Length: 228
Length: 408
Image 1 (cartoon, chains in turn cyan, blue):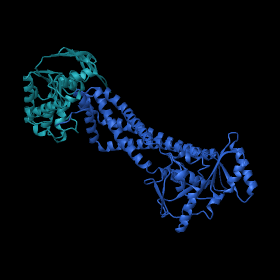
Image 2: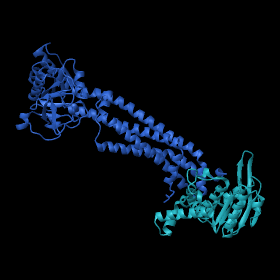
Image 3: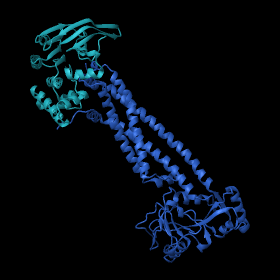
Image 4: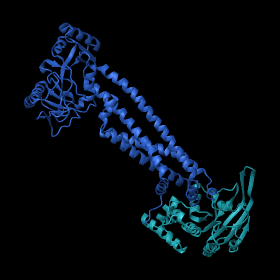
């Protein structure tokens, strides 16, 4: 369950103070496929980044599965995000110098606390842990139909492949929540349908999916849509 | 098997992605370590060189023929083969005075040909019975009496290449009695022998058609007389007494010049201090420039890498992880640059120390392997600390960004 309680968020701009959220509240149940609609500048991406703990609201709180995420320290919050939230962004947000496989494996290694805990928890050696990560990343890419791109580099990917790899990366740590910021932007209709099908499946598997989009056909596939 | 994606792995792949920037930073750290280690080695080697002369001269006064002070310096400081002579009875005149504690003399013999021997020859004849200069620097124990005396004494300077303890002059091989410890001065290139043997070598050479510039009757000549004065005398008063004694005996027939050991070194010390100021100031300037350059390059590169750090942040990297990537990059650059800098510095300075000494006109005595290793380690630590410190501002900046907006 995600609870957004009375958040306020302002930005300073050359034209003065811009209010994005003023006492905004929202409850999102587990396993829901939620669409977020709204005009440009309405605060759709800001909402996602607040849920992910990337931006702190000026007032109010965000409680995810009983954890008030903004009471956590930076280290704890990053660990929380790494473990519980998968992020699919709008554009190519890869490390260009890493292969597709490494980009997908990255979330597992990027939080040192998580890596240590997993190795300890699974009572396995470091090599076994690396094997596990590689197998999982390969499995995800296979599931998304792009196992042929393991050793490719991000610059070699098409629009549709790009989004699939982003989804694979978001799923690497098996998070409960998937945040997708306009994941079908700049892909054709056929690929849009395929991507939405993936999110639908994830939601059916019990993951909470929050998807920001302008596209009515995309939003039409969601369980629920809120407009900002 | 795929490698784990650690901070080092990410730092390495970032550095590989920007080869020109990486090479430029390695070059800066290379130059910095090269200059720093050079200045360390120059400082200690020059100081040791001066100390070496001070210790080696071991005399309060030196007497040379008038006008030959510079040539005496050339032999003693740089090992340039040279010769100059005065009448041996000058030594007797000195002995007649009551201001000395020890008096000994040396004869410089210089070959006119390099084909005669294992190396260009500067042989110095000394009197083992009165000597207080040479014997004290022998590395190993030896016996002047008995058999050794029959065969002649041969002391080899530290730079003289002695194979199996033998040295060859004019087709005759001679056993080296002892090697002398390193002084960093010209005497490291000299062979010392007793006067009798010197005369034999001189005659051998003559018979075989080689020449030495010494004129006739080597036994009647000396090149330098070394004097250790009595404790109740001062160098100035002793010099005056000796000058008068020699003048009384020879008049204008044998003109001498008396050099005070202390002044001989102090002129060099003054020159050394001005060179050291220049070296240290240059090293300091290079250090500051390199430090700022690295900091600026890191700072600029940070601006173009905000997107990359934003992605890592979104994926769950905490500020410690981001900092560790930046610091690892600095560490890799610092290690690569300082290792190559140290390597090339040692490659250039150690083998060419004699040439450097000649070019700068000062004695140069490189330290032991341990001393150089310690200097190299100190330079390595300074370099790494500087690189990490110059990356510090970038690391602090990156941890304060609100990064998600950057990937939008």
